[in-house]
Amino acid sequence: MGFDCDVVVIGGGPAGSTVAALLAEKGHRVTLLEKGRHPRFHIGESLLPANLRIFDRLGVGEQVQALGMEKRGAEFVSPWHEHRQVFEFGDAWDKSMPMAYQVRRSEFDEVLIRNASRLGAEVIEGCRVVDVDTSAGSDGVAVTGRHEDGREQHWRARFLVDASGRDTFMANRLKAKQRNPKHNSSAVYGHFRGARRLEGSAEGHITIFWFDHGWFWFIPLRDGATSVGATVWPYYLKGRNKPLKEFFLDTIAMCPALTERLKDAELVSEVEATGNFSYVTDHTCGENYLLLGDAFAFIDPVFSSGVMLAMQGGVGGAEAIDTILREPARRKEALARFDRMARHGPREFSWFIYRITTPTMRDLFMGPRNIFRVREALLSVLAGDIYDKTPIWSSLRIFKAIYYFAALRHLPRSVAAWRRRRINIRAVDDTGLSAGT
Image 1 (spheres, rainbow, N blue to C red):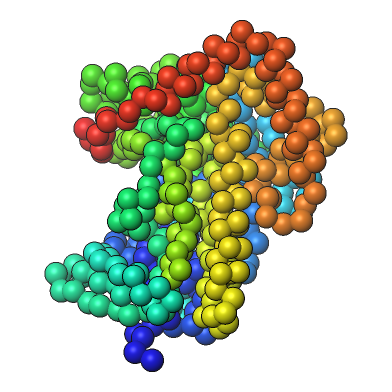
Image 2 (image 1 turned 90 degrees about the horizontal axis):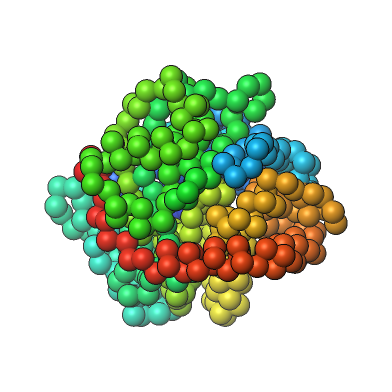
């Protein structure tokens, strides 16, 4: 009684659109508030095979296939090794997920938000949430949004979902967000046309190029463009003394293998940069709200996990909210289950992310062996297959033991890398970079 809707969702990205669609499909009254208007640009074009099952569950599999570039694996290129290493998703533990897609996020995100509307969610674009009151606990929430014309609108709802992405609306409001104490990175990126890709079925592979200050991504898109970005330690961006475009091109020149792939390519977009890339919130939910995807935490894009974690959060969030709305006595149980799920993905990916630039991890990636099926288990992580019942965990523990043993074998090198990493993490990212600066 007295509620305008059952659930208000802040944000119309993959997390918000997924949870809104699934809750609306279950018969709940959902209002999704998106500050922008689709289509709009967003970085993060590379998806994982684990996404495909969620697409099918949402009923958008064919639409995503129509706009996506097939991605059947990942290539790693290291200047410290004399070969490149290719991983095929079809070689993972579960052979039923051999591919994913690379997409333009403007197109992909619009498919998802329109699907939420099709399934019955009320989607309001051009409306920025400016105030939220969650103090009533199980008695609901109050939300205030401001439309583009300046008028304000108010909603009373039984539950709130924060899927505001890097805006981290609730985390900022509650002063619960902090720079990730275990990681620190920044990114600079743009789109090229005419980049040289791999051939045949490998044309859509994502390529990771390591270099002295971090790593590059190379993501082929269906329309002929290629997304290229550098994820670096903040100290490197702090040293910038030239316009961002020139700085980006000079950074690319530090990586001969990437330079070769781009020698006939043309930069066709603005160069953009994002500082303070890695952060975490100290909780995933409250009595009457959930944090999904980047609204909870973001670590690093090296394994293309962002969209998958966001959408998986939407799936788990919808299950928790549906339980709470239908069986209020199970609220505590549902929130605890959601909390475990929400923390699981970032935790499993972060172990690899925190070590991906270490000499020991580079050696293991560039010379993988399948003893005790550790290579298959690693590929399962790269595919995002960490939520189902695929029995990868014993093999992953063996992989981690191999990593620690290899690090001890080269102890002076490992200690030096550890010290450099600690210095880099402590560096405060105050670059203030933005497009065109």
